[in-house]
Image 1 (cartoon, rainbow over the protein chains, first blue to last red):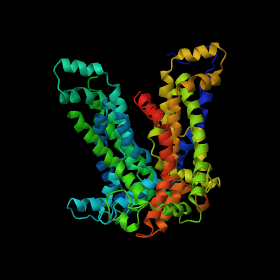
Image 2 (image 1 turned 45 degrees about the horizontal axis):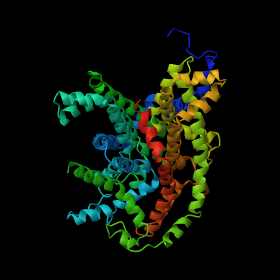
Image 3 (image 1 turned 180 degrees about the vertical axis):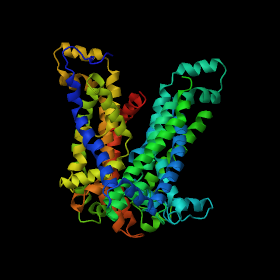
Image 4 (image 1 turned 90 degrees about the horizontal axis):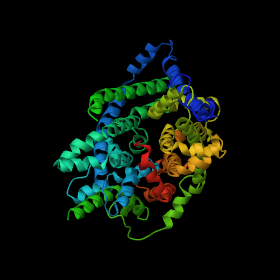
Length: 292
Length: 275
């Protein structure tokens, strides 16, 4: 396209598009650019001597922060691979033409639709109480009950399980991608004598590379921001072993009233997420570009 | 035989997905001892009295009051979101203009931007404007296409409509907006419905934003009311009432999902995200 020549229908001014997207332009500055700049200013220049380094020293001195980052990374590292694996496997299972398959697609999708609802998180809380459903179930198969909320690892695991249960939204994206893979590829593979396993690794996986990457990024970003589930299920406990960075930001702001710390941590979290996404992007770049 | 195994596998997973929800429904009718002593979701007897109490809640207001509050947020927000996303997506999909690439990148960045980063500064902004404890901070941003994902999905759908449609409409004398609302939008109705449903469900589920913005119990949406009740009810005391309140709180989402399910699922699988 040549510079300054806009391919619009005859009689359409080049400003028409701008007018149409003007709500977004205003919104982007109000709700993306402004908060971004503002949190930097509040977070890093409002310390006593107005210096960025002082803000960093402050954060380094905050023992809760290191722990919260550790919890958040551990949580994301546990949840994201499991969620991707489960949703891919179930999507493969659902990608067949069978009577009543639509019903199962809907059923598997329901938890992720309702899952973020507070009512469901409260329900989850009851499932894992000392004499809750899960412990009863363990009892029937002869295992001793677990004190889910008493132990740091198991309480983090409850949150992981809740989010894992809601694999539907990731699954739907995989399902859509699976349906887009041309059938001819499989037919050709069959003619060449490929078995199911072989065609999965040689056709399905390579065709899904980009979607796997998108899901990986989306789920990582969501996991690293987790707030609702730990806030309701464990309130960060025991001994702040489930206090995510998202919760810490909330606590700094509304419990300890430290606005500049809250904003500085927000920014740090953003940088952390950006760094993790960047590393993932670089690590997978080769794999994503191969062949195709 | 293979088919049968397949169905059994699907049924087992389906059970894991649905049983907690069935259990929740059943538990709301059970006595507190029964809740924690039986695995089976069906209650021994149907005691509907608990729902009358749950409707009254353990707070000063009834569930009806909290539902009204929630709808006062959801209805304008969803209308705003649909309208603004359709306009913006139309602009991106059909027109060329200066800085288009830049703005589209900004849109994608916004989609990947963790919302937790923007929550604190926006709180400060609303506070300065004196809008804390009103619904404006919860609804107004939707008017500015604040959900980048919605725009992104719609753009994919608009691109699938042949340009000849626009040209034919233009020859018949339709202006830019008339073409959009009378020709293009009817073509992508499933996508528009999906967006409206997502907006409804996400708002219904939203917890962090109301938690920060709304202070007075009188203005609480359902999510905050549920949490308030769950907190003010001690362990082992009236659990079933909280459980019944949770069931009531899920009804609108389940109803909307059930009504829109067909269009909705086709809307998300048909192209938007894979395109």
